[in-house]
Image 1 (tube, rainbow, N blue to C red):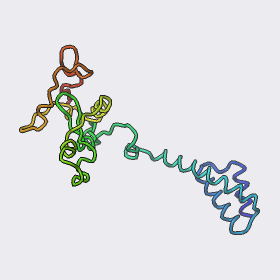
Image 2 (image 1 turned 90 degrees about the vertical axis):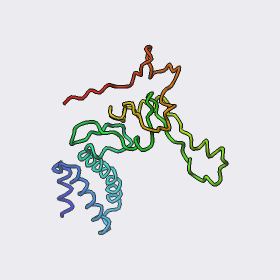
Image 3 (image 1 turned 45 degrees about the horizontal axis):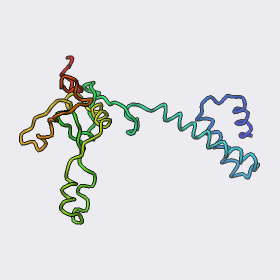
Image 4 (image 1 turned 45 degrees about the vertical axis):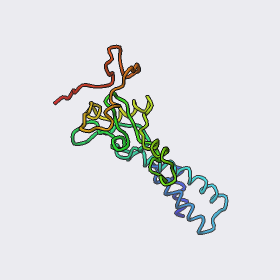
Length: 189
């Protein structure tokens, strides 16, 4: 009797939300399995359960998705809630180094892996820096704040000879030999 009442409610569109429909189908399928109900009805219910459950899951995920629940593989900009400014990506600061001419460099992959098997020349090559491509540099610049895009001068800097590039004519230098992507300090406040 209860099953027929639920079926009438479902047919009469009384069930408004997707969750109640999923609960109804789940109940009907368990009732049909436990009481050896009509086999064709059981197959129909089981085939429709999966489609409605995935719809319910998508509805639930889309309703609670906020800035903290965006997956890391999507391109997005994170902001600090206290200050309200853009927050730099910490992975970029840990893995890359920005030169004063606007290029980014990174360490070679596997530079410390199985050093006992490498020859001396291969170990020296593995410890060298690699430059990033133009598109990678542009992407890394967008992931940083203006604070990290400024030129930096350190005492006893190992990379000091690489900060200045001579004879460069590319997207980073304009016709006046000035760096185009370097931004001045413009803070409102």
